[in-house]
Amino acid sequence: MRSPAIPEPLIRAVIGAVLGDDIAARPAGDAIPKHLLAPHAERIMRLSERFTGDAAERLPRYLDEARLDDSYALYYMPINAAKVATLIGIARAAGYLTAGSLRVAELGCGPGGGLVGALTALEGTALTLTGVDHSESALALAGRIISAAGGTFPSIRFNLEGAVPDLKTPQDIFIIANTLNELWRGRDDTIEKRTRLVAGLAEKHLAPGGVILLLEPALRAPSRELVAVRDRLLAGGGWRILHPCTHHAACPFAANSDEWCHDLLSWEIPDIVRQMDDLMGFNKHRLKFSSLVLTRGEPISPADRWYVLIDPHEAKGMTDLVACGERGMVRMILSRRSYSEANRPFRKLGKGDHFTLNLSHEPEKLYRLTPDDTVLVD
Ligand SMILES: C[S@@+](CC[C@H](N)C(=O)[O-])C[C@H]1O[C@@H](n2cnc3c(N)ncnc32)[C@H](O)[C@@H]1O
Image (cartoon, rainbow, N blue to C red; front, side, top):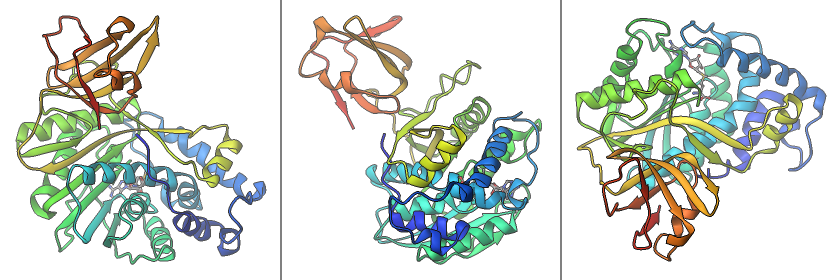
């Protein structure tokens, strides 16, 4: 998967809101002086430790801490915008979100990374954006960024653990990015509550043909909890998954506590993220995240659709991968002696790709492709 590039004016809007308009106006390619970035890098390193800590512990209201929302925006905004833009692109490729004007709401918007993702993916579409968060300072920052990017931004200060916010008009896109895992942490009914929030949005506030994007860090606990929400939503019926799942059966990872599914995204890394990475020793060359793109409707699960779960492995003339489909997880191997024009695309598959392959026989432990197998990649 590859993300669309975040347009330069959106990156400049973030830099302007955090570091000032003079810095944002510097010619492209001019590095920002290190002493301006160093305090933000130091805060991001602290924040990143919190994000990877105990998933059951309640997080403090970190975006209310002095300057933490600025630092978060400077680094994570382009990263999260790229992920959201990619998911919106996937929904559009599936035939959704094609109207000339769309309403987009981000719940737990922080400084608005998901909304910037929508602005990126939906350039040319008239967008009405709304941000919901319980942090006043994060909402104020999101307002500055979105207006500098040319958008308008009504915001709602709201505790998502209290109820589903009433947005007055049905929304075409709901984005809940890196936020679900912060809600109702460490309770017996955590999954139930999160499921109810998502179901409530769909029942009361989602426009016909609208899409809900759930996005979480690719860490064990948030990813596995997202799977649990998925399975619980599906049990209630009336959902169609547009990404990543190719089927609507129980997730095969649900029973295996050591594994989870996540996406891997290539992107055009903006200079600001590269500079921050250099200071922190991080590497956002490729972006990892867990996600679920949902819409209301009858589930469609073609038996020949697959999702590459684990980065394919090439050894001794064989391409070896694990794919997820209606039959569950299947290890698939293409050996050199079975190469053909029809199965050639199999050799180019990467983690997170979707492909079509009609299995010619029931796999036992693994499926060995034959020269007659036809593989089509999206
Ligand atoms: C990790 S940030 C994600 C920000 C943005 N969605 C992104 O992906 O960049 C999580 C956000 O959820 C918000 N949040 C956490 N608990 C909340 C609650 N109970 N009600 C409303 N917002 C909440 C936090 O204030 C924070 O802005």
